[in-house]
Amino acid sequence: MADQRDVPATSRTGMEDTPLMRELARDHARRRELEGLEFGVPENTRVITIANQKGGVGKTSTTVNLAAALSMGGLNVLVVDADPQGNASTALGIDHHADVPSMYEVLVESTPMHEVIQQVPEMDRLLCAPATINLSGAEIELVSMVARENRLRGAIRDLLAHREKEGQPRLDYVLIDCPPSLGLLTVNALVAAREVLIPIQAEYYALEGLTLLLNNIELLRQHLNPDLVVSSILLTMYDARTRLAAQVAQDVREHFPDQTFTTAIPRSVRISEAPSYGQTVLTYDPASSGALAYRAAAHELTTRPAP
Ligand SMILES: Nc1ncnc2c1ncn2[C@@H]1O[C@H](COP(=O)(O)OP(=O)(O)OP(=O)(O)O)[C@@H](O)[C@H]1O
Ligand SMILES: [Mg+2]
Image (tube, rainbow, N blue to C red):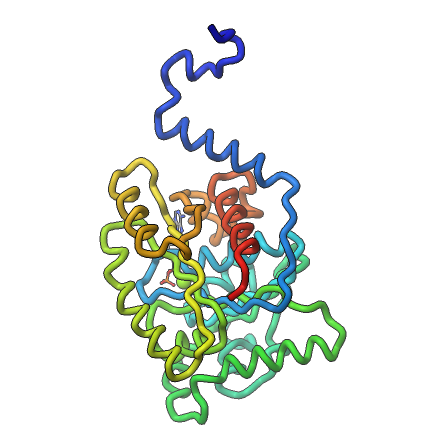
C-alpha cells in the first residue's frame, strides 16, 4: 500500500475530482511546463489576423495577451489595432485619443506605419499601431479608394522594409485585432495576413456564425488573398464546470482537429480586469490561470509551423 504521506491531502479526503482541484492541478502542471520554455523565432515575419464577426468572443483579449506572451518570450511583436473601438490600444496602455496619429491616417491618408507606432510601456519588445475613434470613418472613406482592400497589406510591407533599411530588429509576429464585422477594415486585415486565428467562445451559438466567416474567408481567398489559411482556432472563456462548454469544445475539435489549440482559455476574472489598468493579464497577474493559459497558447502558436 502507498505511504499516505506521499499522497496529496486531497486524495485522502476524496476532493481530488472537484472542478476547482482539477483547475489547480492544471495550473500547476502548466506552470511547470512553461518554466524555462524558449519561444522559437520564426523564419519570416508571421502576420496573423484575429477575426470573428461575432462580438465579444475574445478577439482583443486574445490579440493583446498572445502578443504580450510572445514578446515576453523574447520575440519582437507588433499589435495592429484595426478596430475603431480601440480596445487593444487601451489594454496595452497606449494613448489613443482622437488627435493621436493612428491606423486611420495609415489606411486613409497613407501615413507610413512607422510614424504611428508606439512602444508599449514596460514591454521591451512590444509595439502597437493604435486605433482612434476616427477609424470608424475609414470604413466609409475606404469605399471609394483605389485598391481599397490592399491598404493595410501595403502599409505592413512598407513597414517591414523600412525597419530593415533602418537596421531595426525584425518583427517576428504582427497580430491584427479586428472589429466585430466583416466590413472593409476586417477585409483589409484578412488581405494583409497569411494566417487567421479565430477565437471561439465556448457557448451554445459558437458555431453558428462560423460558417458565414469561413465562407467569407474562402471568397476572399479566391479573389484577394490566395495564400490565406485559417491556421488556428482558440477556445475562449472556457468554463470547465459546464457540460455545455465541454460539448462545444468537442464539436469544435471534431470539425477542426488540426486548427484547434490544445490549450483553451479559461473564463477568468483577471483577464477581464486587466484592461482597466491598461495592462495585459500577463503583467497584471502573471500567476493567474488566464495568464498561464495565454502563455501556453502563445507557445503552441510558436510550435505550429507557419503555413
Ligand atoms: N477568458 C476570459 N474570461 C473572462 N472574461 C473575458 C475572457 N476573455 C474576454 N473576456 C471579457 O469579455 C469581454 C469581451 O472580450 P473581448 O473584448 O476580448 O472580445 P472581442 O471579441 O474583442 O469583442 P469585440 O467584438 O467587441 O471587439 C471583455 O469584457 C473581456 O474583458
Ligand atoms: Mg475587440
